[in-house]
Image 1 (cartoon, helix red, strand yellow):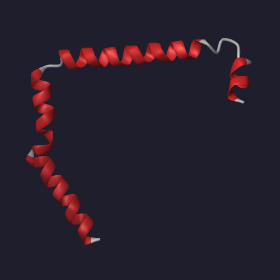
Image 2 (cartoon, helix red, strand yellow; image 1 turned 180 degrees about the vertical axis):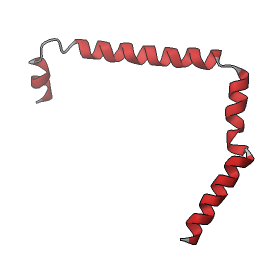
Image 3 (tube, one colour; image 1 turned 90 degrees about the vertical axis):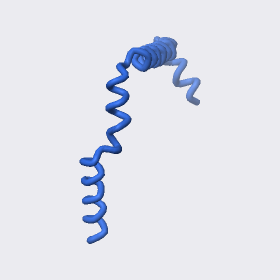
Image 4 (tube, helix red, strand yellow; image 1 turned 60 degrees about the vertical axis):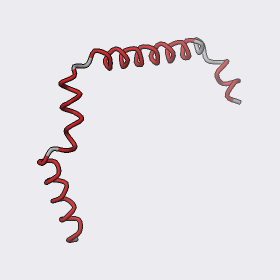
Length: 68
């Protein structure tokens, strides 16, 4: 059924090509970004879950949830 519908659409062969181009561009950009990212940014992001401010906010949320 789907094959019949898709064969009747003009220019349907361009969709897989566009999908592959988007896929390749996205993952190429992601790879370039991961290899060019600065070490300071990675260090900052990896320490975010362990900062005291975030722990206090999470604990306050947990206490509020337990009191309901």
